[in-house]
Length: 130
Image (tube, rainbow, N blue to C red; front, side):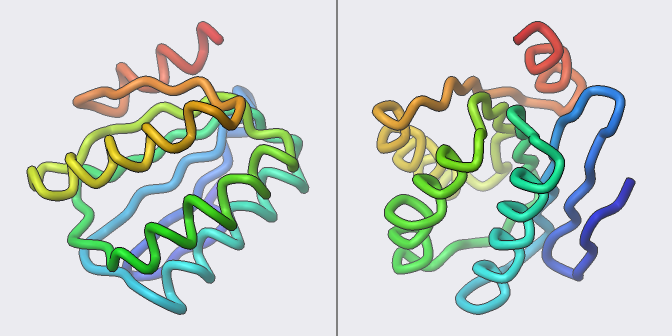
């Protein structure tokens, strides 16, 4: 079920698996990024989602201030809402791969188990096994 759809982000709820899926598309920053992630947080809380698929394969770039907000504000709220596992499909752009790994290094202490993948099917298989 598509929960939210914008040119930069589609959020889907896979009801049978109770998995949230965020597919980033192109450039996103500031208010748009925060709006999308706040809707994702709403999905986690509303549906009791504990598993999340982040598909960043087609993401453009993210402003460092937005990354800071994700690390310091969004992630703790997601953990508090019940998020426990995150499968990350890596960005195609190397600079974004580095940024994603930097983000994950900061969530290691926040009770979210994570893994990196090169495609969505592998990520979904890993989440199903959790």
